[in-house]
Image 1 (cartoon, rainbow, N blue to C red):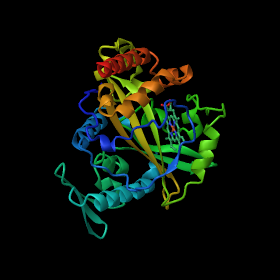
Image 2: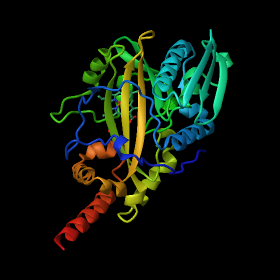
Image 3: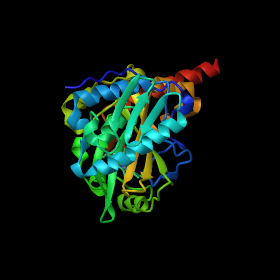
Image 4: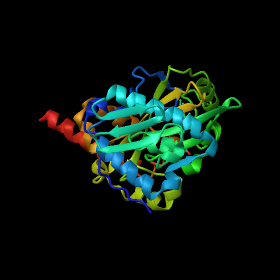
Length: 328
Ligand code: HEM
């Protein structure tokens, strides 16, 4: 069993990765070069999100973290990269003391201090990526490059939208995306095009894209717990949608690792209740327009079909209220 407390939302709107640039959303190869290549962010919700992540990893360790035994070396590569980024950006919060391979990593926000031998996983409480990932609110996935494809060989996933390390371990990029109605505006199949694009990513030149979904009174859904969340989705009403339905946005980052040649997939997941959209009128208008125009296969795939009409009706009522206020 695991707990789902809706105990956080994004409060610093300037860092919320709002996903829509036009009033109608379709799938596309929407990767862009990442300008700030440091993926570590300490947001106002850092403590809450990391605490929730650690709780889930403790409650469902085998669903939330999976790896193949031969991945330890790559995990150390990521471990070092994340520590370097954390210290570079937030020297006041993170620190590492090195005496040869004897390292002590400190997280001053949580008051954590751990000593271990770099490169010797037996000196850590968890595998390297599972250990270091517990200091940041992101999800981390390692996709190994083989036979012109990428295979999911390590995953630490706590903010899942139809995703889990347990479910997806070992799958190729194509297998993972098989359930997605992944076609462009013009009807072109996108999976192969995107996979080929990923093959061209070079070390030191990461890429980014934004993915979005709506969540009905939760922040995490995976196939292993479908029996719990699936029936809850129909309980949303236009009256409750403002608080209970959240725009769930994933800022995704893709890094080619120079030593292992794997792709590190980093997710920064943020949540905004529909009622907070009115804080930025432009966001409200775009979201209202996009949600009225979702093609049925996309709504079904995203799992939002059972509460999409109620969410749109909630936004329509707010829109109407605002317009009648203006007429007064
Ligand atoms: C290489 C790392 C990647 C991993 C591990 C990954 C993983 C996933 C997973 C687990 C899902 C949910 C699949 C399901 O329903 O069972 C998904 C969905 C999706 N992925 Fe990826 N993905 C990756 C890269 C990409 C890239 C580069 C793109 C696009 C340029 C992309 C576009 C999508 C889209 C559009 C969906 C549907 C999401 C939605 O509509 O909510 N993915 N991905």
